Amino acid sequence: MLLLGANVLCGARPEGCITVTAIYLDLDYVLDQFFWQYIDLVGDRLASLGLAETVYTEPAQLMRLGEERAQRLSPWLDELVSLSLDGQHQAQFHRMQALWHLIIDQVTPHVRVSPIRTLPTQRARSRPAASLSRRFAPLREEASQARDLLRAQIAHAWSLSELAAAVHLSGRQLGRVFVDAYGKTPLAYLTMLRVEEMARLLRETNLPVAETSRLVGWASRNRASAAFRECAGVTPQRYRALQQPRTDARDQDIHALDQDTV
Image 1 (cartoon, one colour):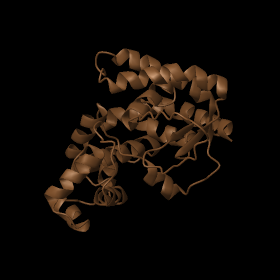
Image 2 (cartoon, one colour; image 1 turned 90 degrees about the vertical axis):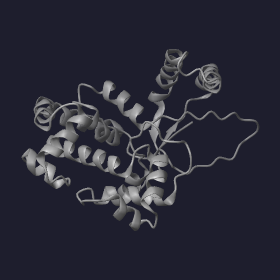
Image 3 (cartoon, rainbow, N blue to C red; image 1 turned 180 degrees about the vertical axis):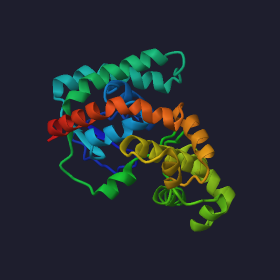
Image 4 (cartoon, rainbow, N blue to C red; image 1 turned 90 degrees about the horizontal axis):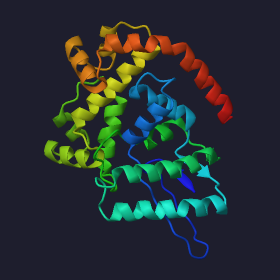
């Protein structure tokens, strides 16, 4: 079995008759689960992404389950597929969650990092955007280019017209293809990136709040605080205060996780 990051190319050569079941997990869902699993290490969901990248360092993870364990998973996978195809997501929501947790409980102890290593820049680009409505479809190249520009220059005062011109689309076209790809408008996506980077600075540095907001591209501290509170649920000052008691314990446990991975 394989655990793959989004947009990771893969292929297989079947031997005999095989059945392939693909489970797509939205990044927001995964990070929420990761947050609750490591709630003693991370103060909130914004911090869980960094810890997840420490534990799962590569976009491809290998799972060698063995025939007996794979047979145990088969009926759960079959039922999950059946419920998905029948469109019973709401009526059978809790049953589908229960099936998924049964499956991942069997899988997690057998995850091994792929021996095929990637560069940090390649790994960063393999991470999908946080989105609740990402369509499971190929990405338009213009959307990827716009995303890369925003990630590379989050402090730049981007306008939709400037970003669209950089990828050779009209503003309306870029808005449409970007929302299809990432579930957010380009400027909403930029706000998300700024909040995530500001949260990192608040956790990892002693810079004043005003300085962290300036570094991520907000000239107005009030605008930064409003955007941060809308995304994180607390003000930047409160966010930093909540992180302080966890810092030493988090660093020690991350070091222990690194040792376990090695």
